[in-house]
Image (cartoon, rainbow, N blue to C red; front, side, top):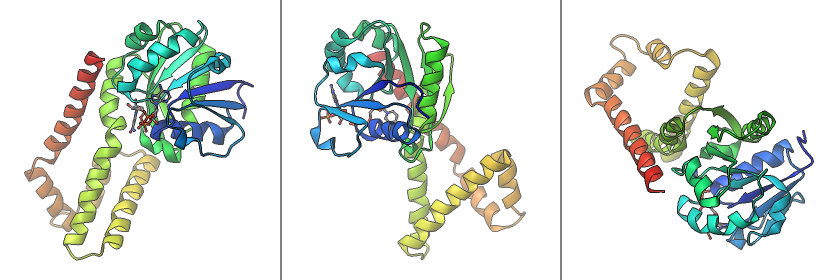
Length: 269
Ligand SMILES: NC(=O)c1ccc[n+]([C@@H]2O[C@H](COP(=O)([O-])OP(=O)(O)OC[C@H]3O[C@@H](n4cnc5c(N)ncnc54)[C@H](OP(=O)(O)O)[C@@H]3O)[C@@H](O)[C@H]2O)c1
C-alpha cells in the first residue's frame, strides 16, 4: 500500500534506522527512501527504492518526513548542519532517547517535530513505539506517522513527554532486561545439567509461548500465574524463592534506574 507517492529521509542507518526502513520497505509505504549515513560500509542493501547519501544535502528537500536515527550525542553536530536544509512544512521524527521535542525545536530552529521511542524488536516487525508530536502537526500527517510506526510493529500516541521517559525504560530498554532474564534462565538450566542449546530453546520458547498466551487470552499475568501454580508444587516453590528474594523490588529498581537516567539525559540535552 503506497500511502503517498513521496520520499522519506533517514539520517542514521544503524540498528534502529535500518529496522524502521525494513518495515517501510515491507509495507511499501514510500516510493523512495533517502538514507544519509556517515558510515558508508552500511550502504550494502541492494534495493532500488533506497538512495544512499553520504552527507546531508538538498536532496532532503523533497521529503516531508525526516527521521533522525543517530545517537543522542551526535545530535548537536547534526542539528547545526540540517537546520539550513529544512523548510517549514517538513516534519522531523526523532527516535533519539532523552532528547525533548522543545530541545529539537531549539537546536534545529524547526517547529514540526515528532518524538518516538521505538524498541529493537522492530527488526522483526514486532516493535512497540510510544510517540508524541508537537502541537502544529495536522491530523493527516499524524495518520501517516502512525502508518509508518505500525509498519514495524505497534504504536501508542501519548499526551505527555513524561510518559515517553517512562516508556524509554519499560519498552525502549525493556528488551535488555528481558535478555538479562533469559540469560539467567539459560544459565540456570545449564548449571542444573542441561546442555546450552536445550536450555536456550526451552527458555526462549517458554518466554514466547507465555507472552502469546497472555496476549491471546487477554488475561492478567496474575491469573495465568495462578493457573500454573498448584499448592505445594514446583512452580510455587520457585515463586516463593522469588518473593523471599525481593524479585518485585529488583524489577521496580531496574525500571526506576532507567527512568531516572532517561530524565537525567533529557535535562542534560
Ligand atoms: N538501540 C535501541 O535499543 C534503541 C531503542 C530506542 C531508541 N533508540 C535510539 O535510536 C537512535 C539510534 O540508535 P542505534 O542503536 O540505531 O545507533 P547506531 O547503530 O549507532 O546508528 C546511528 C548511525 O548514525 C550515523 N550517524 C551519526 N551522525 C550522523 C550524521 N550527522 N549523518 C549521517 N549519519 C550519522 C552513525 O555513524 P557513526 O557510527 O559513523 O557515527 C551510525 O551509523 C539513538 O538515538 C537511540 O537513543 C535506540
